[in-house]
Length: 557
Image (cartoon, rainbow, N blue to C red; front, side, top):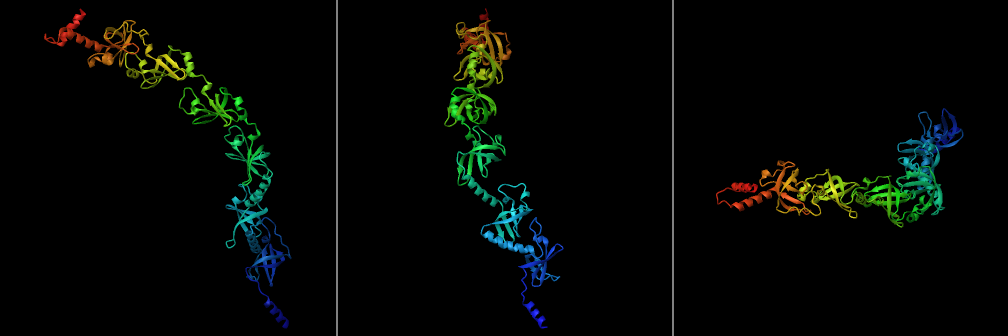
């Protein structure tokens, strides 16, 4: 009894461990996928074997191993202790991770699962979240090779109360890349020629891997000629030689170039393209103010809109030339320092006014379409894509310029004589009335006709504005305006006459070309005055009709 009492007292003196703490135990048996652990204090608990395994690995536990477990309850319904190896590892991991977070140290872990927005990482008992943007320095399409691989991570944020941990793999890679980049850049020098591999192509250039460090090859440094997009000359994975143009030690940025390894074509521009020389080129770009023409790779010149066409004025360059079109241009100016060449497109072609003057001397007859009618004349389209102008005074004989303009419309085909060609001012003067039958010669027709003379004329043409008439068979031609066809309004109708009809009219004057103008109305008024003067007013009681009748009869006799 004494011995039993001593043992009882001894057991009562042993302190039972507190629930919710981590205790040490020993594996005494493994059965049915569980490890039986003696945690002391005459207590045993069971732990699933999978809690002894790391993600993707087999469990590592054997009888006799000492392990730490988390005591959840001292005794359950079966009289066993409720313990957890996983929770014990988690508690230990949190303690370790908090110390690493405070010291900004790296921690080791393994990616074991994929969740929305990223991945889960086992940090030796604690589970952390790895955002997709923090996996690598560039987007990762396939994370399969990274799964289950032990690697370093940087803790970005952790909250033990909520059980949240956020880690980054990208921060580790950037740090190592920065160290590697600094080491490589330290060995580089401006002007150095290196071998590289094109890693990426953008709108403005390409990134070239120089062996652990990337450099930017800008599109303007790829070739001396104009390049619209880097993909025209480069492709991803292409090997090429580049020259280091500039190194920024602070930002670790490296600028590269290819064209610097080639001869600058502008060094020989003045010798190859003297002023006034004509060359073939290709249109590379069209703007509102002109077109750029490539004379050779790396050498471009500008054809200003004013130098594009002899005849097409104030039109967009895109209506004269098109991109990639082969054209002939003349060198107008060269500025090697500013790398500019002024070119002329029209100068490489013959002046159309010179060609017209050679083919159509003064006095020759031409035919064309009325392009436009202005207040002072008609513009006629002529061969060679040039226009000539007929001044309103040179449209027709015997009528005013305004009336002559009204006789023609846009689109009408007309004939004219070349009066003058001014090549320098790009002007062609034409005359239409000079082609009319009976037009006065240089000597003029005034010697045959005089003002106020009454003559018999033949109607050549009936127009809305009046009559085209001729004196005799081959005499001078003139015009009787509609208002001069008679004194009364009923008589002022040109449709009451027919071509070939003969009529008496008075010469009322001559225009600046000495062509006569006629009037039936003026003849009637003159005859009335003559009759009144001869027979008196009305003292004899005769009416005006009687007087005129007597006068006409006398004249006939």
